[in-house]
Length: 389
Image (cartoon, rainbow, N blue to C red):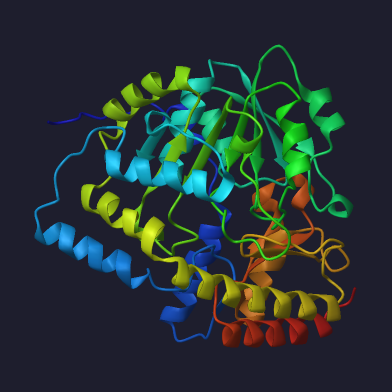
């Protein structure tokens, strides 16, 4: 097939798609490394652990056996049954496999969910700060993101009254990300129950589930079955490159989402689906070791941020991120992050990537070795000591 390109201007949705700033930082850091510069990476949200051995072995067996063809568009029934069993075991929630659709990562899952929910001009409520790609997906599909402020003193959690003030006749859903990126916030069961009662459909991004270090995590499905859940294998199972996730949808949305999957993606990779069953059923020991290591790193990072006077008021308890409040040093987190990269050799993400209310913050990822985090913190401390406040 030959596609002939005209010389007309790009469509608005292509021309106005903003960059994912963390990738700008990563790419600049990689350029510096190629020139021999030592860089400590604390910008990217990717586990430094290898994929657990049972998953890799299951993939090799699947490929060798010829498991390299299309699957049904919702995904292999064996994997969907394993996901359903996971929710029953962990949250005591009954989820029919018919409500589960396996996707090639959580980003396609978001695209499918937002496409199913929104017409042109309709609204999705989300917090500010937020995961950087949420508003880009919503605008790309013709929707309108509506931002609700959250505050450091609340641990960056929604205040229900602020959500209620933002609801209009065009509201189609509210995004809840717990544990959250970039804040590390974890919502309690009581807080999620209150969210479920507000009214609009909840879109729960649960990709960091399992990475909780204090308290107990909850799924939105414990409190309502009229919600969408987006989750996957990238973070907890160190499977970012496998591109495998899932969506759990209310029954009335499953067929429309399946039809969109058929047209847009056909299905998720076959052998990756087979291997993912092993992730859910054979990797508890690996997960425990990774979570213990993340928590050790988290505690060290928070201690160093406190000693430097830039820790946030409420400690993050989930995911693998911590925000640092650097407002006493800058009101331009983008320029400040690149200055740190150039002068200190530490890659961090500027808060502005996550919304206007995250300006004056930097996001640190502790998905790196403790040794590297220690070196990174030493470099940051030395850099800050040379600056006027």
